[in-house]
Length: 350
View 1 (tube, one colour):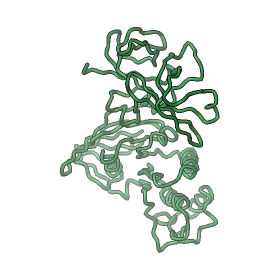
View 2 (view 1 turned 120 degrees about the horizontal axis):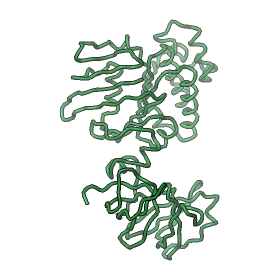
View 3 (view 1 turned 45 degrees about the horizontal axis):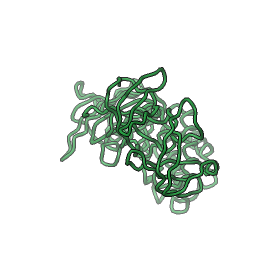
View 4 (view 1 turned 60 degrees about the horizontal axis):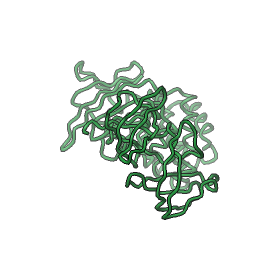
């Protein structure tokens, strides 16, 4: 169980973060400059808060009221940096041994993370993915109370990222250590995290299970932080058991994902997600006639930009299914949008 409450004033920036989580992996998600890394540093004992309390699995790291402030070495925190921070003059095995006197554990980690064959090499002689595994092994060799991952995968290519995601999951299962992950990649959050903390300008703006937060953003600002890009204005005209009807400005009623806290007559935003395109009409979808503006192809998806309510909306079709959609640039087309992937966002200002 993590209980984090940190207030710290810097020149031109105020960090005021508070959240609790009993998840295996907790993700701090925000754009750069929002205080994610500073929060990790406070947990690690590298930054002393002005006020607050930090508790990890019942162990008190910091409490300003009680005068508790454990030094970093007593907190036993495993910290994985974006640049790995390996010692260049040490071999792989000596890097992993650093800070640990448990030779059995060191050898076990070399095996688990598949770096036995490079144990006698120096950091300059191994790949980025191997460096990542060595850094992870070194962090775990101290038997940490918590593992902090500060955007460690941002510089790696997709295939290597997926491989390391599997390693992180395996490590969590084997060692049971709670993890805080700093990320600005929502796909990474979905892949690894059980609990999401969305931050902006030094504050927590929303928390919860990642998919639930993504599909129910608190407001338009949070939706944009999470990567939502296409928004339509409308008014709620009906509320059912699973879906609600939102009437767009053109008069078309769009079936959308049900959202608690909104009622008939409320002005809202509708977020049309790229993967909301349905193969065919069903009771869970809405039929729309749109103008096709642009079509582009990639190995995985066909991207289609269409105009809805005078707004440009990007939709994605898996390349394997694209022959089922006959569309031409500059011509109207009939599409169906799947209601479960059309979130409704409150619009309190209207």
